[in-house]
Image (cartoon, rainbow, N blue to C red):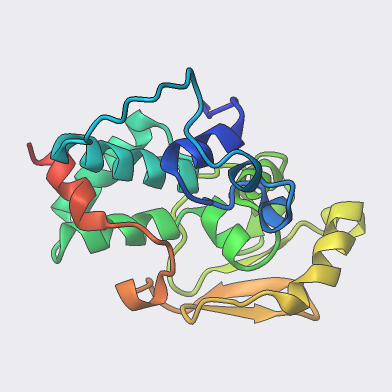
Amino acid sequence: MARYTGPVCRLCRRAGEKLFLKGERCATPKCSVEKRNYPPGQKTARRRKVSDRGVQLREKQKAKAIYGVLERQFWKHFEEAERRPGVTGHNLLQILEMRLDNVTFRLGFADSRNQSRQLVRHGHIIVNGRRTNIPSYMVKPGDTITWHEISVKSPIHDEMAAKIKNRLIPLWLTLDIANMSGNILHPPVREEIDTDISEQTIVEYYSR
């Protein structure tokens, strides 16, 4: 399955803000946005005004970087959002949030979505008692997400178990810290998604 393999700090610098793609590192002075708060690439003294089209493109690229989705899959998610009843932008964010790799991250099983994606791909996460190694798998209300019985003995599980007490869990999820398992209560509404994305701008980009 295709994925972005380049330097993720470059994506934050291009967006001009922290996208928290490296977990705890982004909150330290080592963060590239803190040390080099300017876009990557050749420097120029001339500043160009960004067009409306450019603003829309940047917002779409930012959403793709945050959720770790490439263009083809992002477009499929957008098409699905259009088919669903309701507001297309809200539907798009809901679809992105209900991906297994994102839910694993939201539950505190990983420091970042990239790490969460790797955990899923390596079979550390199970859904309703079955191993699921597809990061884009769409969870549903009532699903139970937990660690594989073999993975419970791994160092990464112990590391996450020590950190999970300090994580804030979204209201549309429940977490059993003792058993390191979570449940999906309902699809998230916009007020329960704290991602700083202007979904309407993305809809305008694809609706040109």
